[in-house]
Image 1 (cartoon, helix red, strand yellow):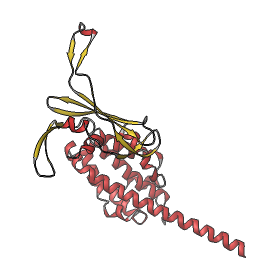
Image 2 (image 1 turned 45 degrees about the horizontal axis):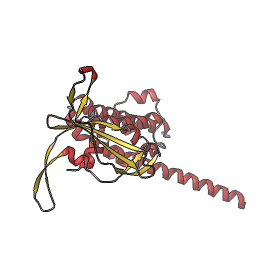
Image 3 (image 1 turned 90 degrees about the vertical axis):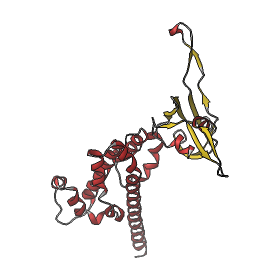
Image 4 (image 1 turned 180 degrees about the horizontal axis):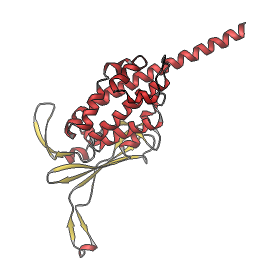
Length: 273
């Protein structure tokens, strides 16, 4: 059981049985409470700090539980028993006042993730900035929104944003590519996706072309698949999208380097004439 992934990567409102059985290094099984494992988790990890605006190492505080009882004046001042709530804080290595916080709530022997701050959107938007050379600002926000929706457990909605990104990449390549006897954008938009891909194939990254059928997977996810199915397939869809984007960035960087050195060569030639 990966406690770090449960704390940081699981979607909001994910649920687990609080009673878990774990095997130690000697193969002996022991019973644990998941809220205890989270509270006592002592691992450090790399994470984006929204206040430093940079990747940092975060170290954990000991988990903090809400008080077991509360006196509420709205109920005659009587003592009310609280259901256990756990808050796990991690502090930035560069400035310990910079924190990320995760909250869990225990109900009927199930542990529920109920809070995460800063939001997944805030913590992932920066890592997508490397795609600025191939995506516009709207597409970058949609990429972050897809990750945010995944963190909330909305896999179908995440599929929808990834499909929009896919469509945007195809249209952007059409608009920016020099194609002989090019049709109008209006005509291009009316084509089936299969024909659009064929039309701009030579301008797309190889990995994108090799996995172009991902569009039909995304469409089925939006229109036909259940939430649980989309949740299962989402990691594969994400991997293909990001591999394709990374290849497109590499291709664009190579083009820019070629232009840069061609310009430098022209400058040299103009000086030595």
